[in-house]
Length: 572
Image 1 (cartoon, rainbow, N blue to C red):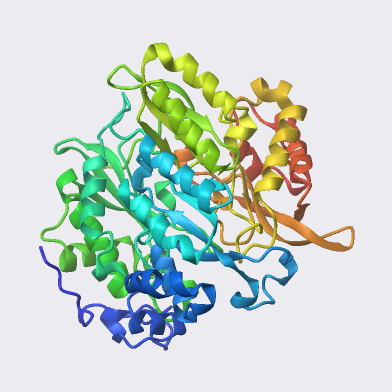
Image 2: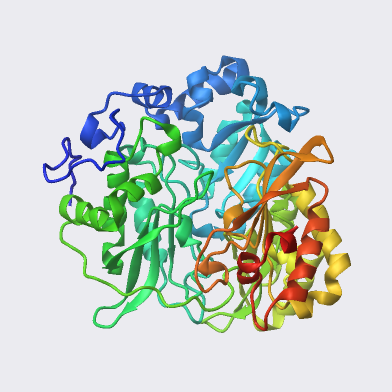
């Protein structure tokens, strides 16, 4: 069904009392006149069009030849951000203009929808990292790989090599549908309800690079899973599909809308609909079109789906979806069952075909191109041609014959990718941090890796008593790329006062978690007034609060539950 973009809002709808007198910049309400500089740039030229200029002008002319509106705007549509210039401390992040913070090198995000990679593709990424990116390759918590130190002169050749093996950087950043998350065990897990790969492929094939969705109000994130562990953090995506079994209609998906974190976190909500597999692409198109047409564009900090949902509510969101964008209404559907199993898929697991997949832990996502290439070699030498990153900065090797499992486990250990990691290595993730990110205030990956090593030394004997993976998420700024509000211990980078001195450190969030991360009910972490941790004190604080938890908890009580009921003194 072809959907025409609406030009006026239906007469039955009125603005809520919370709506300001100024227009929101909603296309379907206020027209398309741009109300800020970002909207002006997008209106002047579609971000998808910058690729030609990169290939024909900027790659030949070098960094100095790049038009600023392309550099600071449209480059993102092709997965490119300038990275932070070395030597600029976090205290200057908010004081300097973007051009003063940026280096003449790029972070490049390789789009890997659903984390689905062949070993050939993994090897190409590794070789690109080694040859063009100073041998750094980061696994993100959105199933991407990020490269660093990329020169504009090398971008066309990198694209050529990626596209030769079916990869791309199209819409990996920008105000577009970002990389689609999907279960890392899609199509192979013995216990999955449904393989979401056909639905994922239909959306990607039809809409990736589609100009009708290349100018959204802001970034837009999608997740889909058919696994009972609900392994795609669906509660914090703009549009999510979670497998359910309808008593009359069979297996399909429950639709969630409006989740996101950043400085104003909000968990997504169910619309109460049942989405048959054959209608997933249509429904995704409809929800995405709502965001395009009704999303708030005037203020960038309000231009996410979560703010529209907060004003509309789920009933209105469903009504607009069904009446304006779908061919027919959706049936009511059940909520997902309580999650079962570990969503990071670490360890050795039997596949439905009798072979095995092995989930290994990275150290907060930091790898090298050399390691990726060696991982591809290891997989192929043991009968596998598929690997998949997860949303927890882990990586899986698929299709391993039973007699080769010990060889793969041993090889992963040699690569620093243990399939039997400590609780702390398994539970810790970190964003890019001040090393490369222009928004960051504090170092993340090195600090988090050091904390893992220290906690493994100090608390190894307590792991059986702890009995659960305590998640530790480290973020370099308030934007929550590392999902700090949904961790047992979430650390938000900022300048903090310690003993009268302003130093890099973190604000502490405690007791957050998602149903997909082992909590019976999703919830955001609490903050304790005045509780700050210096950048080099992560392990000291984590050890202290974990020991206090073990001393104070009730039988069977999780860290998150304890953290929400404990008094402030216990959390210091």
